[in-house]
Image (cartoon, rainbow, N blue to C red; front, side, top):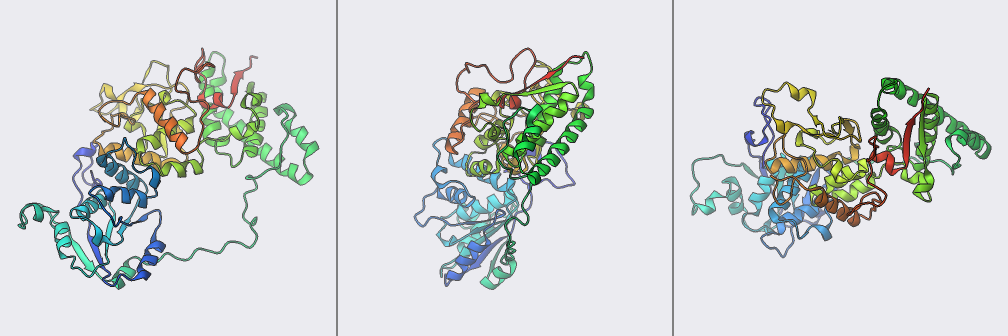
Length: 503
């Protein structure tokens, strides 16, 4: 596993980065096995601080599964048959690095088998975290401390520690020092007495009429209460103004002689990443959609929506499929490969063949956005800031995608999942030119779209999500994004289409 890159030695190849110094390991002596310490550890657990509780009946491979369970992975799914122990270590390192874990605390560390403390120390070195071993036994921990400090070579060398190579510092501390170094978190602030005191006025709306956009506002005036309609009218007018600003930014795409595909892609990204996909509720998304339709019509653009094709509760299909609840369920998945592929498929509402050619350099390190090429179907894509590099090769280019804009923003609550898979790719030795989705059995090979589709469908089934637009075989109604003018997958899945009216 690679470590963080010092600022003074910059390189694009993660494998060429020098190793960072070893982190100090702290052994906390709790010979009396104080029950109060167990309660304190439960209070210390946080997204950036995990507590590992080793299984009393242990085997040689149980440690990685205990760490996965401590990191919030589903205990019923942490033993998938397709995941080896080596891949599990890479996966947990990627998840912990993406979650910015700062402390790994091991309860009852005297239960660990020989060699397991050293594996924990290597893991915390890789993710730049502190390791705390709670020694709840009257036995002497000197042998374990010596093994960690000498990087495990004393046992292999027959008790003699070689002089070459750095050692890891191990400190033995008492309970009082542990309490001072890791204080309890501050108590939570009390909730307001009135639950609606800080409520979002855009998060909840009453039942809205199903009238088309040309009659929507007038129908709402007749059916809704006066104060409710006033709030709806404010949201409606503000949304129309935002749409006018969007059209002014892209008015050159509406000039005569320009193909309508580029405006469709820009509108697709606008609806998905800014307005409809991020709406706090389906009813708010419906208000925004009706205002956008009315504003676009005044600019000569007809945005049609066919809610009957979506069945009952059609507004529920307008926001993004990738919600915070789904991301919480995906974080319980061990495989970063499956979680990241499902995130992109649900967010883009697209089959894996729409993003399978992504390179590692197309993904932001923090997972906040990615770059999808937008030129013709068979063109190649090269980012402008890479074009002037002296070491540019043909591998920097990848097939373009005609269904979305170049820079695609990802929801902030899904960023750690994408960052975790990128960290996993780095651990496999991937450079910036390797595919983001590689074959899990052979990282040198690109994953096939059929295999990736099976992975997404299997993951969706596990978290009880049914992507109606994703099929194992050929779709009788035609695949999304096909036609003489490339359609947008996200809009097509919601039965939205655009037509630019003539003069």
